[in-house]
Length: 245
Image (cartoon, rainbow, N blue to C red; front, side, top):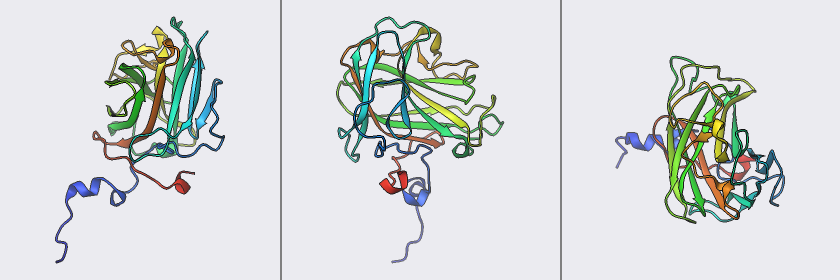
């Protein structure tokens, strides 16, 4: 029997939908620098994702591990090796991904045609509660803090956050940084903004966040990171290891 039609929903997912994920190595497959734990500031536990640590006493380790949810092989795991329970204003621990401007053309941020984008990911932590992060432009003078909730300790959970398209600010579409994606694991008070609100400021998280760096031995893991145009999170776009490399 001939196929008479293709359901519209089928066009939104899978290979027939074309490339959707603006993130490279979102499944944490590629770690060309090695899989040994990194502990220094501005270090890459897996390709494209790096850790920023600016705390007075807090330390961490981060690496690619094989602990992962169904359908994935790897995740990025951060472990607190010494806690900092009193973060000063400029102190922070962040996991970051920078989208190149050439890959951030379609959302049209900074124009009247700006489109919403949706971030989705799989996350697991030894702590529960509200966690936060943000997206920013290259100049870090436009920020959109977001939150997500971890309900059960040491359990993989799927999260998604829709980010309203920003019609103002300068957003690069060249070889510079098109968008900065931050996952906050603890930051000082002046670096926290109002959730789900664009601000002309350099914000990394929100005031209601759980500070992972405040608990010695605490862990946080992530994989399946996807950023796509639109207001709905679609299933993770798996790409081959060779293509990601």
